[in-house]
Picture 1 (cartoon, rainbow, N blue to C red):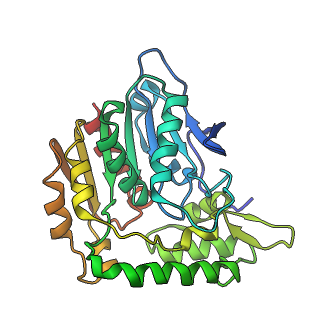
Picture 2 (tube, rainbow, N blue to C red):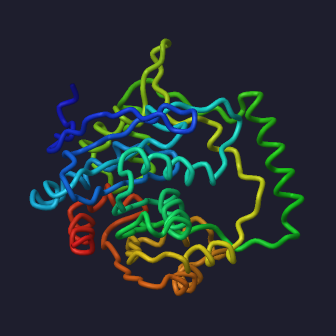
Length: 308
């Protein structure tokens, strides 16, 4: 036991749900109550459901007691099974979410929160199944830069090259000597992450193998690029069909600008948001992309206010 380890305030329990050929791992905080609206949390790329723990702990007792709070490990992440595949397809996340909600909240709308990749998933899903969502929150789920048809040949070629690299093991994820090494990796990526939280996250973000090396709980196939181009027009058509009130939350750090370096900007993202019928926006100060790690109390307060 690491002395500095973060101390959990609300312990989740693990549920296992069979979803489209994958045994899905789901964390649940609290219990279902008659008429209560579940709060469902969708993590981002190369992350896990346990990543939400700090935000869940930051919710007020009154809010946390009102409803079950549910977070899934996406396919090929955390403790959810990885299908036999050499790459992953974005529509599968929507299909998995649809099946999960049918299992966990049949016939009842949910409040849905997604971070980063998960934010992109929930936006698309809410435009496809608007009747399933009561309130929607997108945390730093910016989508991708606009594309042109002329990019298609090179993109397909890149996909083929990355599949070849996947077969030869060139895209295998780096192992770590111990949990402290994993924690150091997390802190290198997020300069605001404290040692106590990093040590706790490391235990859920990675596991030791038979050789004693710690490996991230994410299938390396997730790192293979998608061969198809992102079409802004399709995304906007889905945004326009969202019937639930939407809250878009950004961190004060411009992570979008840091990633795309001028190829896709916050101004462009904000222009896309005009397609959403009912929209609110918020900014979490002194936070980067992992805002649910950096400022969980501030984020929890914003969500509580929006959820009502």
